[in-house]
Image 1 (cartoon, rainbow, N blue to C red):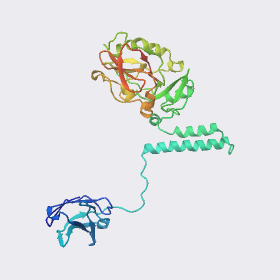
Image 2: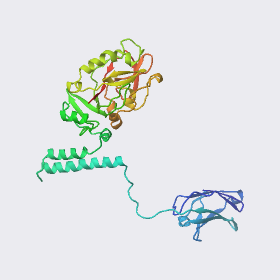
Image 3: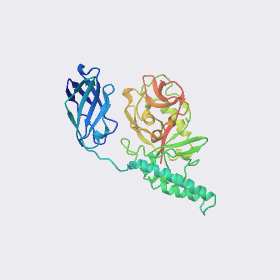
Image 4: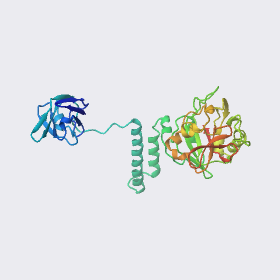
Length: 372
């Protein structure tokens, strides 16, 4: 708080403080020239009537905790001495309001999401402990029985929560009938973001759940589905054979020809259950099933996209990159479908940054598609 002393009058700027404050409230004084060279002492009279002196150093002191120990009015005055000369001031006061204090603080209540994370972590720890006991023969339960029990607990989560948990578990080489059934009934039992099928050395990873539901014109996707993005590129190509973005991605050779080849190269386990949907791109709606991602799906926002080419039906960042952003960068350049300029399209560089380059450049193709 600021206190001005002129001759023997004290002018106080009331502080905002409270009962029980300790070693926090500072009193900063400024004095008129009559006080030059004096040894100055501030006096603080608490609401209990007791005086508490404090020697000033460089015209500053901390208000004694004793003066702020109880609520009420606190008085302030100053005296200065130099040889036989003594100067005093009048008293000014300020209010110390009551506060609530005391007791033993409890831990803050965790958020619902944190409770879920803690429960999942606790379950993993318990499962590991039980698994070790089972393997050591301490009771008649196999490791498979333990895994089944953990899976039963995890499936108690709502379908929506499955897109908010990154698990990263291998689901096999191809989609089983049971896995497909749990996608189609909308429960997504034992399927989580980051889980993957591995075929011919490529990990096809779950990138989101029901991402396109209720999206499209004139028809909307209603079937439960999962989006898949491979961890690597599935080939490479140019966006256009000529250095132009005229007509946008919708009319590019990438869209018309190269992506058809990429779609045909997918493992049969995916090709047979692809979901077609309506996508808005370059000013109009069109049908698509296997495509390349846009900047929003990867980054959650536009970075290099031209301002005139931002309307899209893919309006959210994929859960995969929200939960595990390190999976955006895969060590090679790969195309995104947004127009950046009259001759350039957007891409993710091998270093993980948002970038753009000429339409005739040859870069990786990392597709996104839905199954269900």
